Each structure stands twice: as structure tokens, then as C-alpha cells.
Image (cartoon, rainbow, N blue to C red):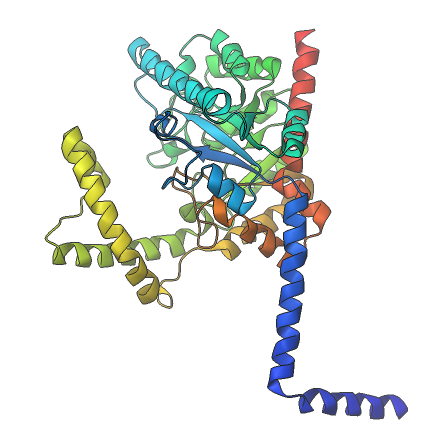
Length: 435
């Protein structure tokens, strides 16, 4: 009876409190949660495994020391507390000919050279290239930002497997064997569109490339090849593999995402999946609806200004000078449309956001375990969600993880610890193979 009386008194006191007192308690709890998240964010190494680059932003006149319109640059990394950015040597898929391979190789070398300029000439006092996990930790302790290099599409190696060793010497620490289109090495996930494949997985050259990557300490990235190519790569690799920017297909049915069968293989292999914050890979339906409604509003505003918005294919057909003028104009109209889109669609077609993104992290953690999950943005390559739309907003990911009850140790693993552990294991295998 005494317990019941005490409960009733406490209940009465609670509901006798003024609304302002209850709101104050809520505000206090929120402030404590944010401060807890900020401390964790400061203490852990935050690592994003996929940031695309344009060599035009690596010159003496225009570079990442300035807060450019890019989603990632040094000021934005500082503002958001992003410690490590994997800068991507990306080459689009071209013809499987000697001429195509040479064009691709030239493109790749230009991007390696651009990253060299940033870290050795433009801003060596602010950012340094890391080749190992020890480098990462040392550079972070020094107060500088960290650059690492991933190769998206091994098409530039052509038929010359010695280029794999050279890419490793230039700093590459992961590489995918295909992108959007079948390469000489592997089938692409894009084969799902028409069911047509070149190799039924990996080519013989692709299988040899896996062995060379193992030998020279380059992590095998399975984010873009076909499912069959990925299964073969996991089975062949003597070291753990990574998916540098892919999410869970069970939550978003896109060919770029990984189904439960492949996820289980990655776990058994000891690898890691870097969940990607690209809207179409996070929530297909939500992203498609938002994109369609946004396009309607953009067209409406463009029509008022007497401007015609082109689809990507028609835009690419424009002569270079006209294309540059078009991009400048359409960018201005997009900027004008952005607040209208936000206001008009906030209820009818809400944007894919940080919560949707962290849903994938939750799913992956439950499916394959905390030791096999990481984070990627695909910034400046189509990535970004509401709340994490550039590097300056990186803290919001940590905040959402804290809201969901992740501990500091778990967040440390997700934000980079798991990826660096895989890198260590890959480099250990490489040393053994080189002996």
C-alpha cells in the first residue's frame, strides 16, 4: 500500500509540473546528448571511404584550401570534423581497346598527380597522404587532415597487370575491377538491366588481378561489379575485401547494393561494408518521388525564366562552350528552386535524410556484426542526404548514432576502425605473399 501511495504522489507531482519545466528537462537532456556526441566525434577518427575529385580543383589558383562549391574540401572537413577522406581515382568505362585503355590510364595518372599536388605542394601543412593505418593515426595526432586513395574502376590498367603494383606505389589502397559497364576484368552490376554479361563474373585477367592486388596490398573493392563477379572475388581473395560505398539491398533494391547472401560472405571473409549516403541507394522510392517532384518545380521556375532544362544525355551533346554556359545557368536556377522545393515538398515528398542512412547502418550491424560496417558519402559523385550533404555536416551522423544508443567503442569502429583493421590485414597478407 505504501508503494502505491508513493507512486500516486509522484504521478501527481509529475503532472502538476508546468509545461515549461518539462520542456526545460527535455532541453537539458538534448543538450547532454549533443555534448556527449560532440565528445565522441572529437575523440574518434572519422573516415569517409569515397570522395570523388575533379582535377580542375587541384591547381594553384583553385584548390581545396578554399571553401569551394565542392561537398568536400579542407575548410568543410575541419568544420564537420571529418579526419580522413579517401580521394578517388575514377575513370568511366570506355571501349575495351588499346586506345581506350591508354586514354583511361592517362586520366588515372592525372588524378594521382592532382592528389600529389594537394598533399605535397598546395597544402602539405594541412593534409598528408596516408599509406597505412599507422600513418592515419600519426597524421591525425599531428593535427593535420588525412588523404587516402581509392581507384574506382581498374579499366585503366588495360592488359598490363604491372600497373597494379605501380598504382600501389602511387598510394592506391583499394580498387574496384569495374564501374558502370563491363570492363576487361569483371562484369558490372549494370548487367542486371538487360541480363547481358561479358564474363559471367570475372575474366581470367580479372582473376589474375585479384592475386596481384593481394600481393601489393590493395584492398579488393566490390562496390560496382556484378553479384557473380563479387562472389568470385571474395572466394579468390586471400585477404579481406571491402565494399567502399554500398548499402543493404534488403532496404533499397538497387543493383549497387549488396544482398544478404553477399553480406554473409563478406562477414565470413572478414571484410567490411561502407554504407553509402547516396539517396537512390538509401531509399529508392523516396528518392525517386522526391526527384520527380523536384524536377517539376525546377521546370516550372525555368519556364518562368524562358530556360529549358535538358536531360543529361541531351546536355552532354552540347558543344563544350555551350555546355559550360548551360551548366552555369541551370546551377543558378537550381539554387533558386532549392528553397521552394524544400518548403513545398517537406510533407508530400520529404527528402532522404540521415535517419534513413543510419537505418542501413543498423541493418548491417544486425545482419553481419559491428566489426564489418563502415561509412562512405560518395560526395562530389552524387552522394549526400539531408543532414549530411557535405563534409561540414559530418557530426550529424555521429549524433544520430548516439541517439540510437551506439557506444563510443562501436562508433569508433564504424567511423574508421573496421576499415583500418581490414587495411592492416590486407597489408599483412601482401608482405607474406611478397616473401
